[in-house]
Structure formats: C-alpha cells, structure tokens
Length: 229
Image 1 (cartoon, rainbow, N blue to C red):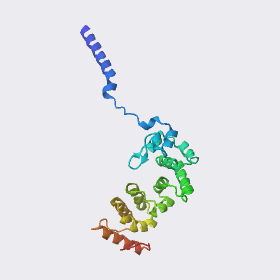
Image 2: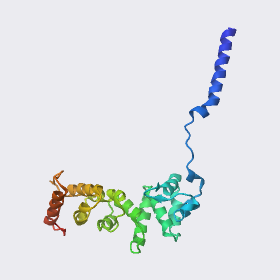
Image 3: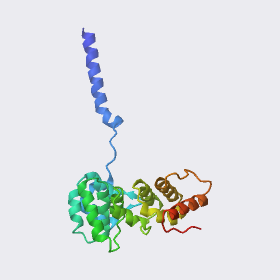
Image 4: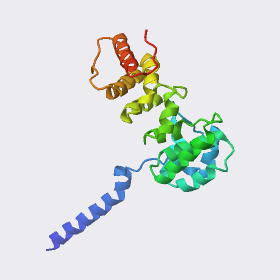
C-alpha cells in the first residue's frame, strides 16, 4: 500500500514538473505584431509618413497598416474620421481599411466617396474596386475606360469582373487594350471575360493574334467600335 502511495506521489510530482515546463517547450504563442503597439491615430498618420510606425502600405511591402487597423475591427470611427481628414494619403488608407469590411454601411460610404471625388483626381481604386465587386455600374464604367489601370497584379481581378458582371460596355476596352496588354495575366483575364460575353466562342486559340482577330470581329458584328489589325 505504501509502495502504491509513493508511486502516486511521484506521478503527481512528474505532472507538476511537466506542467511548469510546458510554456517553454510547447508554447505556440507568436510574437506580437510590431504595429499592434501603435494607437489608431498613429497608424492613420503613418499612411502619410511611414517613419511614424516604420511601415508602409504598398504592393511590394504588403498592406501592413490597413490590415492591422482592419484587424482591430473598429471601422465606424474611421469612416467618420474620413470626412474630417484633409490629407489624401490618409483618406486613401482609410478607404483600404474599409475595403476589408463587407457591410451596407461600408457600401454606402464607398458610394459617397466616389460621388465626392470622381472629378477631382483623387485615387479611387479601392472604393471603385469594392463597388465593382458588387457589379456597380458606376465602378464598372470607370474601370472600362482603362485610364485607372494601376499595375498587372491589381488589375487582373478588375478585368475579370467585366465578364462576371456581364458588363458589355467594357468590350471595346477588352478588345482594344486588355488583349494587347504587356501583362499576360491581364490578357488571360480579358479572354475569360470576352468568352463569357460572346456565347459559342472557342475556349482556346492557336495564337494570341488569332484570338485578338476573332474577338475584334465578334465585337464589330455586335456594333462595338473596336480597332482590328
């Protein structure tokens, strides 16, 4: 009986030792995000001056600041702050934070931003992209001019949305510009959109030139102003 009791005590001591050691051996806690120590006001200011938080939002570096602000989840105060903010860089940062949230309130906000800044050369990529993903005709029309192209990676999804939304007014842009783009991924997205808008089109072509010629002729037959070589 004493032997059993001694073993039981030994086991309990072993468990206590293991429990004390587990945090050091088995911890899966990640290092805190370096941006988490900054206040919301500091992060907003960092959109205009990256040195404040030693980070920047851009395609090469990633969307560090806006992702951190979106993670905090407090979007309503930022939407209110937007209309009092004078710096377009900070306004643009708030727009990208808002892009993370799919709510009616944010949709209303994005529409108001576009309506206010469409004529003053403000960078409206994120508000328009947010609305285009809802097949908003104003956003689709703005992108279909091709004047807002911001780079291959960001514009692929924009071009793809023309077909998903069946926005046929974009056909001249797709035929005249997107199919001739230097970015192969934009060409592929344009082909996918045109394929969905012209029933019976071939899925594959033997060359890029034949694909361009085919869709140019189809577009002309439907009355669109396109330039065929």
